[in-house]
Length: 238
Image 1 (cartoon, rainbow, N blue to C red):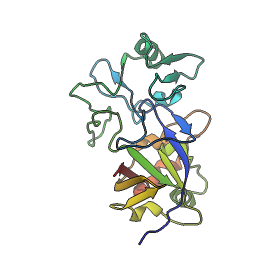
Image 2: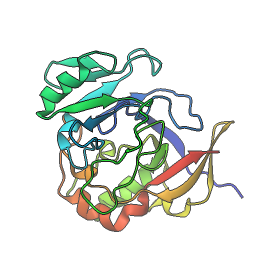
Image 3: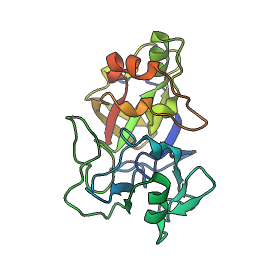
Image 4: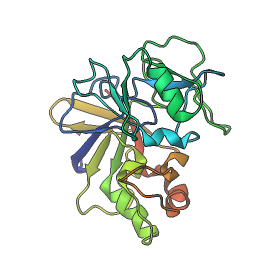
């Protein structure tokens, strides 16, 4: 028996891994997720590890968008009036100067065998080929879970952008962690899109990192997210 979870309230794409991304009005979603999502990443020029804002929080000062769609270059705003693009010959040099460390800009055609993500805990894993997502092509979050987390720490602020979902589902009057019962199920969106939910999103330090203008840091985010880490779900198209 089918059950209504809610309606899609917002869509996001992140052209460059760990940089802030862009809100979308509409998008085609295929077997690999949203076209152009995490299509680029920065590598440390010294050890080749893929940079992540879990450790390099300065990445969140930058924002990447596709002014002409994901078939063309992404525009990277460095937040201080400087810009570059993923197609610029000097993009790596510009980004290196902004970060104060030598980095390389790589795209989805990167074929290096070592695709380990920069992360200083025991759960380091390889990014899948073709994009620089950590575990899955899509990340789904509901408004019910955001409200449930906020209820645990009413003095804190839990901005949805801290959790970096691809899809935010407005679950209406539903209460509690709506995603907890979704593992192994298929979400039907519209007439043709079907997403199989296969795992909860693990606890992530990135939710504690400061982001300009939109999501002030809250000391409650990490502490409250720890016992509620199953509130977000990863999904694949089927």
